[in-house]
Length: 384
Image (cartoon, rainbow, N blue to C red):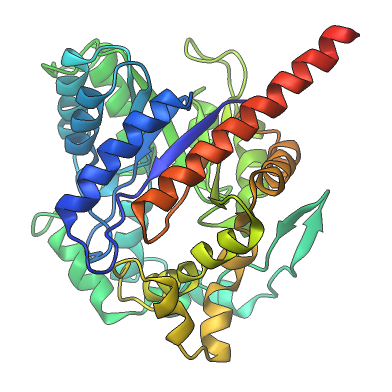
């Protein structure tokens, strides 16, 4: 069985606080290390009342201090909002104390946000909305839903305002490929200027992407490992991994492509309990996709009280339908399908429930079942 890793958004539950969410993150990281997960990645989100992870490098330092073996990283730093130097210095500082354990995952979402906010790709958005949308399909057992239409969210009036707050006035974001090359130059010590701390840091550089666009191509062309987001953009995961592998060039980092694929998961002792715990997810995704940002994570009772319209259901359908929910055996089967179809070398699991104890239990059950399945596979292989 391939390795499992954790993606944590540091969710704030309704009635909770950011402090509680961050303490929960540290607690979960310690437990994930004990359960044998390979990596613990922290996401970067802004202007989200229900997410505490706005500064991954800071939180990574706290998690690294509380653990001893598990790799800790970003999933992902939004490079459109920071300079390559600031990112390298932040991760270099943490690496100086916890060398050889950090993953610097970088995403283009910050640059994408700026493009949408300024209307730089308005024509492209309109063309995409007007062109025929691929229909939902099943590929070797894996659901590939109809693509989500981002045009309404891109036109939300708060988007441009938020984008303006994430950069200095008048600042512009360089091309993503140029930024990645500058990050690498600072880390490698080949830049004209020297980042201290940062230069020579034992940081593993990753690129995250949700489509077969620039992120996937840049990761492949530079021979870097790539993370594809089935949990965010399930409709384009196959396009993303195919584009990465097609563009891949061997490097001193990798001789062959290496792909990690993300998945939304809720595991419980039985299917009925898992279904109950998973109820609030749709309401939470609805808040994100309607432009409000992630709300504090609701309770199952909150979800039951919501009156769903057809527009609501359409807004979240792809995310709901591609979540892996159930007892451990059911979820393991679903994840094995995801791995087989994408040929992933690793899976990145993200779980959100209202109660922290239920999230801890989900990761515990999954790790145990995954290890048990792997042990049985090794046993069968040994018999042959």
